Image (tube, rainbow, N blue to C red):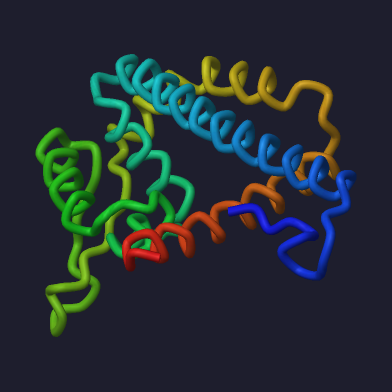
Length: 176
């Protein structure tokens, strides 16, 4: 919904209404760009995953575990939060990946078997190394001529959008 100057205090200022319409159009283009980027990223994940014999979502799961694990394993909860997926989906994916010998699922403590920590196996790490040249070329191409500061600003902006989308999703789910 666009709030115009007339809605707030009297006669509309045509320049402000044009600016509001342009901002709305820009917002819609941003949403479509983000949608297309998401589709491209999943297609890339499918292609990279195929190189090691897994699906795109399994590839993304392996990369998330690789990224988050600091040596002791990483909880399903933390991986699910990074990927913005339900824990039950990730738990099912991790069982498949474990059966394929790509990840280990370990209980965090003998007293609490509910907390499962995920880590990559040596086999998974070796398989992922084979894909590294493709992944490196992709990352370099995506980065293009952006310098460190530009990448940081882009990442900060995308992180803010991610947080806003999370809140917006909750509003939509609540019927607002």
